[in-house]
Image (cartoon, rainbow, N blue to C red):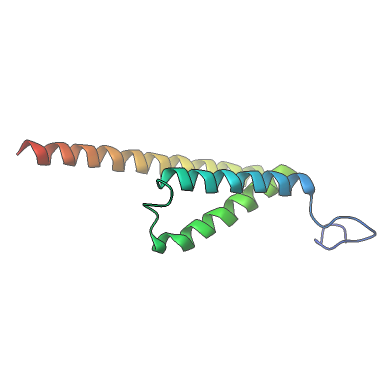
Length: 106
């Protein structure tokens, strides 16, 4: 039962390489959150749950990817999802800029 997640015959239950890469990714997410929210000045308390979910998801995905447990289909789906998210954010930003521009014209 070496793939069960429990230590068997002196083996470590976690792959150290995956854990290290996951912790590096978490540190990056925390740093980007801190920098992007202007030292948490713009970080609303309602976002804490989403932030923790993002942190745990990033750790899980990076850890599993580092040890090679993520199927290629999953990676393709994630790429499509992130592309759609980025396109939506770009559209939202463009719409916001256009709306601000037309409000000031009147």
